[in-house]
Amino acid sequence: MEHLFVGHPAGSHHAAWNDGPHWEINPEFVPTVRKLSGHGIDRPIVLICRSGNRSAAAAQALEAAGFREVYVVRHGFEGDLDATRHRNTLNGWRHAGLPWEQC
Image 1: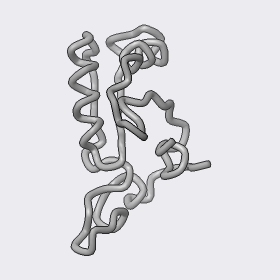
Image 2: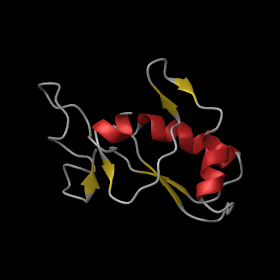
Image 3: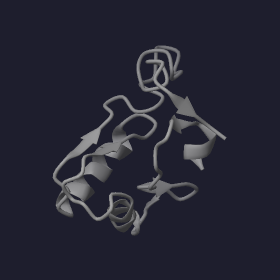
Image 4: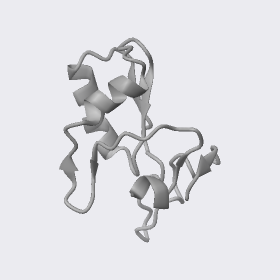
């Protein structure tokens, strides 16, 4: 649901590594990415989450499954927290003015 309400890069495909309310790892993550990639482990895969933390763990799972070109958007979609504990003010996809959409 975060993908829809917070937003995501325009034209991206969604494969949840984990999702609320319990935030358990999705056992279908790797098979979903395989399907979205056309079963090509050599195809570049770019991962993004809110801040980059979940994407890093998801990247490790994809690399362990044999994917060879896995990249993580370093600061994620919303970026790091600022001094007042707000996001979208320091870095991240949306802060950089890159194309994005939400429901």
